View 1 (cartoon, rainbow, N blue to C red):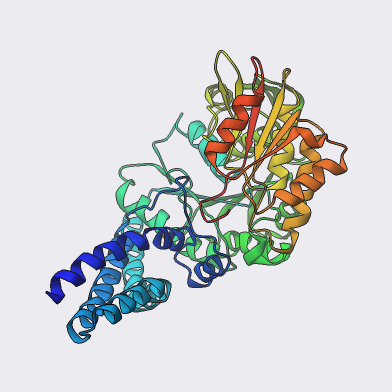
View 2 (view 1 turned 180 degrees about the horizontal axis):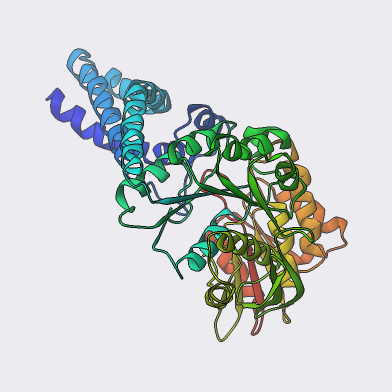
Length: 473
């Protein structure tokens, strides 16, 4: 009978654990971040993010289920009093987060061994591909867009394998090498980082021949703490790549220009009047951009459906690398015309009633400023939906206050999502004399939809600026 009761209650415990485990996954399997979410009661309720049943999560869930079953079995087997059994069961439900942390540390050595095994396997596979050209892209902003743009250009001459979506961790790169890399000429990889040393790990894994550093700015400041740490981390690509490696720098930011100046490898500067590649005579509209692309002194007439200056800078940076790799100016211009927006990054979605600018993946003030500049080029009622920015450490309040002011200068209505930044965004908008009655709040997608139904009219433009995972209220 103890077996039966333990099994039934353990199934209920597994359902109870779902949102805790989803929070654990959204925290990157990091116990300190998970504990902070628990302390702030920021559990991943809601449906914006689903629990992804990776092999790691299946192992975790299985061991947690076994531990829970064991505790419940001991309870029902050795405790004769019914009320005390029920009380003990309730306690097991309450201490679930501690059981999860215990499970994490039990599995941690195994997870490290598994990670090292697959990374070593990926390195062996790379070592056998002697003629493979390996390109790494890192930076604070624009990595995925630059990667996708460059891939389109390189596909004119090469067979290209890219890390999918925003797979930019060591396991994302490892998975790409083991599962996607075949008889390709080029492997194009995006490198992400939240901590000092992350780019070093990725660079040593890939051992790239070429590298790109995009715009550098204040992102993930909760973990990096200072801009200098961000710069040093991105510069790990330069430090640990091949000695004969070639670098392209997006000169749109002071930090990237600083790294360009310090680089002793063969290097090219983009998005700078004195650089190898730049854009001139830029014409922006709600239909895209036209500009003169100058590469090594030669002018290319360029036209794209992509919106905003930031995308032009991404195009110029990618064009510089494509040129270095032998892609002709004619093919570069042809590729620029074919470019499609990266999903959720200034992606334009039109229907017969309204226009949507989907910038949901952007999570920084620089990108928001550019998105609002794009919004300003449209006619009609303008509505901005945003939860603001997170993971900015001590700068979070100031950045969201600034965001509120920027939105107020462009929008007709504001819908502020979630609780985490609403006071700062509201205050920033009010400081720019934005009418209070035109600011609305929504704590979930259902409420957001109801507010939008009230505010939208024919010909209106809606900007979705950033999105937050479920563990942010």
